[in-house]
Image (cartoon, rainbow, N blue to C red; front, side, top):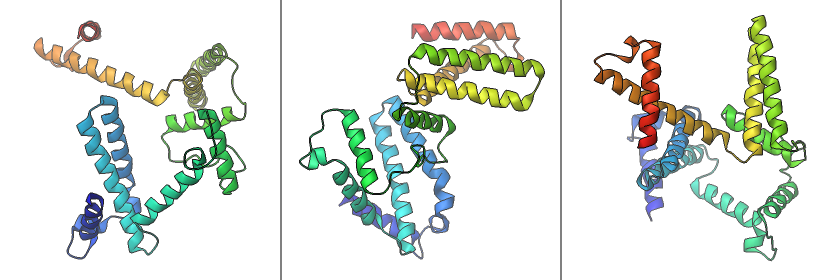
Length: 257
């Protein structure tokens, strides 16, 4: 079985006489690689590249097997325990598929999911508990707002959220005039948090929206650099007026392509 082969490869890498680098790794040292692999998979999904998605799924799976191997060496659990645990969880939490219950909508499924968590003693006193503290800030803000909305703490319409965004901008402008850095930081945080809430309210993933806009900026900026080289100079040697011209040319070129 291919999966057993991967597990054996990891075992050999960690064994005496295996790879010195792999043998030195710990849960803590692997954390950055786990995050990096997850984001590389996200990028592949954004590009809708099947080969790249396959490769990045493999890299992420390798990280999971790596962590399971470390746990096995510590006598805690192994990769089969991980698979058994998640399989049992999915069976238990999907009685409408694997049992007699019948649920018709996604909302009913979410309500039943919460009920099962409550029965398992895993539902916290606060709806905000259980959100990973190390989530990227944008994603964490989105998750917090989603949880709060579940109990009805939400806006009535998008225009109300937009009005709040404008209000927060006004408070930031006041702090900016005062030159109060600490207050500016707080107000800017409020602006970002409210914009994330606006995105959530209208059904837009703010992280995905920002990643797309950042990618668009990178494409256009790269075109500017290429144009500057064609004109025989570095972009840093161009005036702001010249850079504005090249930026507009890059935008037009992108729309044509």
